[in-house]
Image 1 (cartoon, rainbow, N blue to C red):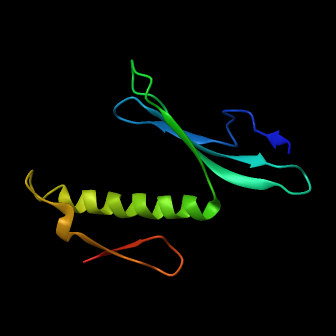
Image 2: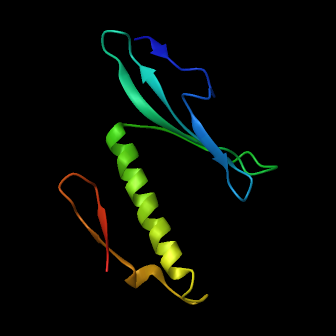
Length: 110
């Protein structure tokens, strides 16, 4: 089985940004297999912290990438809501996990 990797990084294949703690985050795609049976994956590259070698990388199916995106958006909404609640606030009551038919989990705000 042949493996094809797009040039890393290229402006049209990957989107990225630098976090406030200095990590480079890149999201892109790659194709595994061959022209007859290509398998596409969404890639996530979380670079290392400045001065450390602690980065990580993952190749996700499109469904897994959507699940990750939904989880990140839910957590971002929770963090924004809790920003004005003070340092002792807990997210325990902010969201409830329930199994959904298409997801490993679905987070429902209360």
